[in-house]
Length: 119
Image 1 (cartoon, rainbow, N blue to C red):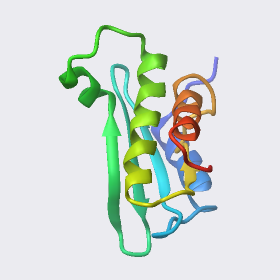
Image 2: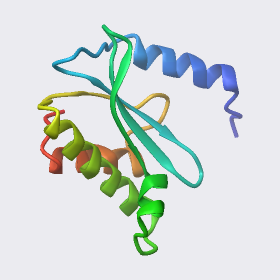
Image 3: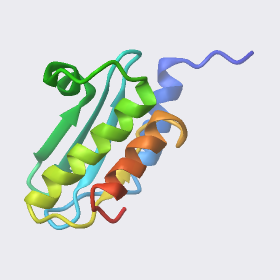
Image 4: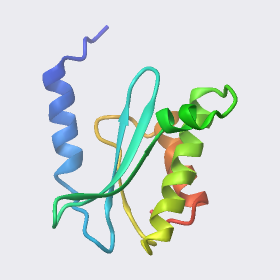
């Protein structure tokens, strides 16, 4: 079995990230995943600012009932989509970082689409 080293993850992240750049009209939505929570933020790379962010940690603080991690990811995507729609952002670039497009990462993308964004 191959052991995935930290250097290998960084190389993968750099390769994915080098092909995309966000702007004010079309921000880059960056995903970060831990074992317990999932985080998403919309970044304007021209000005180097974060436009909006949302995480499953905020869902826990809101007092939502216990749900599994993939459902949390779907809700995070929907909430971030709503926040961006309020700020009149309709299109975005999806930056999955070093993560494979499946499971929780895919659910965030689906939630963003349900929230009204074009990815």
